[in-house]
Image 1 (cartoon, rainbow, N blue to C red):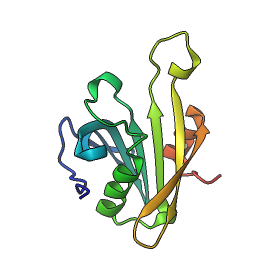
Image 2 (cartoon, rainbow, N blue to C red):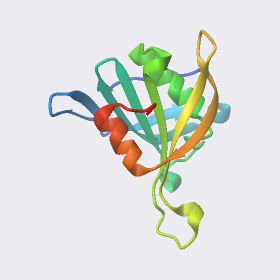
Image 3 (tube, rainbow, N blue to C red):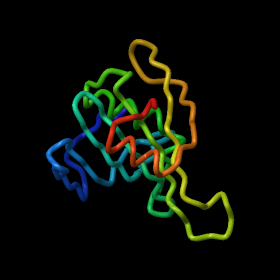
Image 4 (tube, one colour):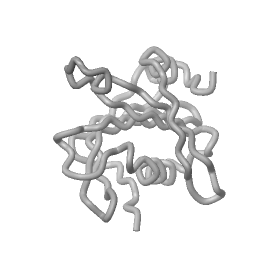
Length: 145
């Protein structure tokens, strides 16, 4: 069974940014594969009818499944909590820079496109995007431009 998203979390900060949207930044615990306790960083930006979720991998600080592997669970929890329409939901996976000379440890952002089956988000497809596009999505909610 999937745990429902709960607004009150460890290290939660809610601030209003320029009175245009609410911004939540927190450590988000979730049940990973086989029910393993897991966690990721989570930023949620609500603006008008759109919800943007940015999920950050925590690497060594996460005792369980990665956020990328569990993106369906995390996305559906947030999607259900906010009762957002599928076309108004933007889900981004962020992997922070690990300060390595190896390219696969660099900072990356992937917008995740899901299929809506009428009940839940399924079949994630990842599209790498730039940090500038993430900023644009946050400021302008232009995810599909």
